[in-house]
Image (cartoon, rainbow, N blue to C red):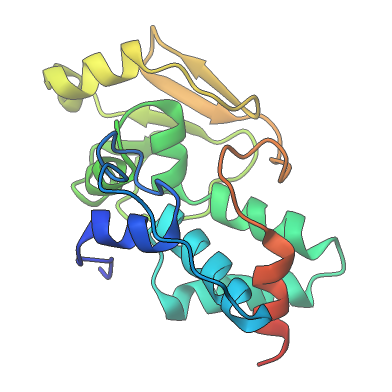
Length: 192
């Protein structure tokens, strides 16, 4: 399992955006730098990678799949990243942060259509039911997170009584609550 283990707040200040959702991430201020075209593309790529907690090799594969698709590349990129299981668990409110959601998946607390899945990069399909394991519902932190966190996106449906949710349609880039210029990310990789 590979994930970023470096200083999170330092990275957030460098990127100029609170990519980790922590209230104190940008408390020391952000330095603005004049960037070249390449620098802007690189910064957008790093922002997107930091939002989803994906390392370079896996991220590169997702971007190249989006570039090869016959559909609109930025939409395919957004859909691929948003449909990751760790991200869906976070969007549904099982975890208060993406890191917590990823840990929940790794530790086997999440079921997809009744089967245990412990791979954070698993692609959730339309109609797949994501459920918190019966045994894990007794963990107070998970139960309270799920009951209290309201999803901010409209492409998922949440069932608080059954501790479950599902992907009802594919997301659009405008619906995703992150500040990234997807075209610059695609331009960065199209040159390579």
